[in-house]
Length: 125
Image 1 (tube, rainbow, N blue to C red):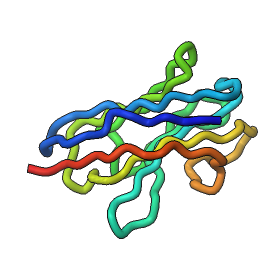
Image 2 (image 1 turned 120 degrees about the vertical axis):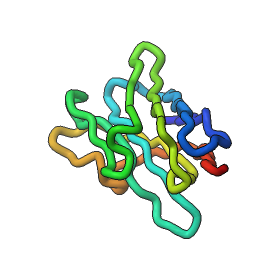
Image 3 (image 1 turned 45 degrees about the horizontal axis):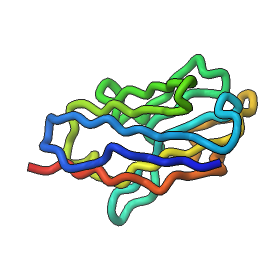
Image 4 (image 1 turned 45 degrees about the vertical axis):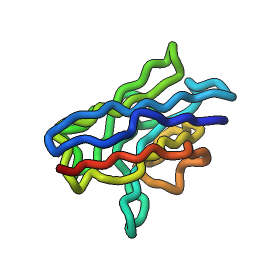
């Protein structure tokens, strides 16, 4: 499995960015894909994912109402639309993939087997 994240950059507070993560190497429909982020000096934290059935989307409390997770199965790509960005959103954003298993909690970092290289998002005035 290979994951290629892109779309990071520099944006002013209140701005928007859309991150993309392209999945390749296996049958994407068998995998759950999530977004995590890691700010300088902090641990990697959950941002967004869908559950094993694909019917429910989960968000970290800190991004609810501002970030939107979406998935295009035809393109084997997941997206993270980020609006109303704040300086505290500054981090390296990672996409991750895990083989889908019923009832597993895909908000947990340790559920994921594959990680992309990360893309840096900087929010600053």
